[in-house]
Length: 174
View 1 (cartoon, helix red, strand yellow):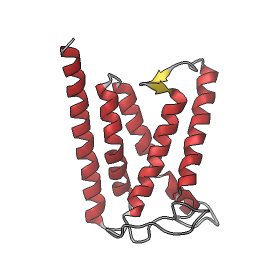
View 2 (cartoon, helix red, strand yellow; view 1 turned 90 degrees about the horizontal axis):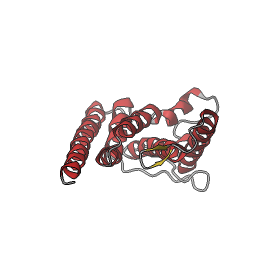
View 3 (cartoon, one colour; view 1 turned 120 degrees about the vertical axis):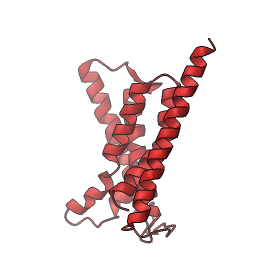
């Protein structure tokens, strides 16, 4: 999948999380999480910049998603401790948990987009080299890439609208 398709899948998968954060009254966390998911969703494709690492190899696996999430948790923990924000939360969770969740979702959304292509991904590498694919569209399909992007934007708009409506509806009932 190309960049627009990856962004679209990332937005579509993040939309319920963002809507939930809005409904709970955490708009800054909702926007920050969405920005983080979009920023990190192309991370697995950095394998094309690393010598001796095949494209859709180790960076397109569940262990890589766990590694990135763990790294985000460690960096956020260290930053929170260094700045004295250790006890602060982002929305309903701690800063390290939020960072890890966003990082994991970003990589998993990338993998989900690539599963749509005939090449697929070896999700369980190094345990298994089996490539998982739904073979829905070639990665270079302009139509599918922009359709997925449009789907992500639509899902985000609906989730944001519902989140705000739930928040204002809950406020009005008190």
